[in-house]
Image 1 (spheres, rainbow, N blue to C red):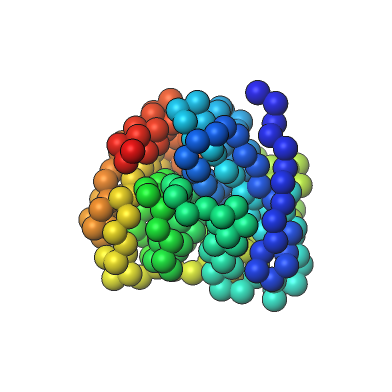
Image 2 (cartoon, rainbow, N blue to C red; image 1 turned 120 degrees about the vertical axis):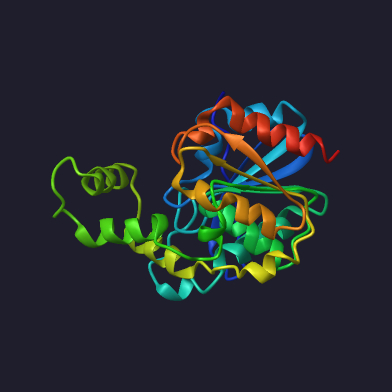
Length: 253
């Protein structure tokens, strides 16, 4: 499948943000994780498979990521700015009847949008548990800070050295990504209790984040869980990943 064209819109502060679309039908906005971009949903055919089931799949790149602008000044990354950008995309596209999902960091932004008043028909919180959503523990953010701080000092072949090499080869911008990490806001458990949107929570069985998935489901009044194979990196490429999304969305029609 040819890569979809990149379109753009403006954040509320004027930063240029990119997005791609595939398919036609009910809009589904999908948010990617840290150090990624919209290609998370394209490289293993997930977006195409979901679109084939009657969805217009809309995939933005977060600021500091992919084809979106990567400002270097910390002032371009105020608290919860990725959530603000999500609402700006909804406004830009005039979306009122839509579904909303995200993986990893994208899942945290989905939760932020829900607690700040977004009302999609259905929501997908993928690759995160309550620990991450509530901002407890180290997680990917602490690892990335360690990688960026270590520069070229890691032992060859170490996890950190391989990650640093991968980030360089992918053209990631460490300054922008650190600002992004600083902007992410934790969501208190009590705020989750106000979310009435039916929400699917799904994490790979070998993902360390799976340990607090049940607590996240329990904190959401309309939360449900789906079991996925794989770990944090491999789960999105599994057939079960797309099946869980498609079946959950179809149940809301």
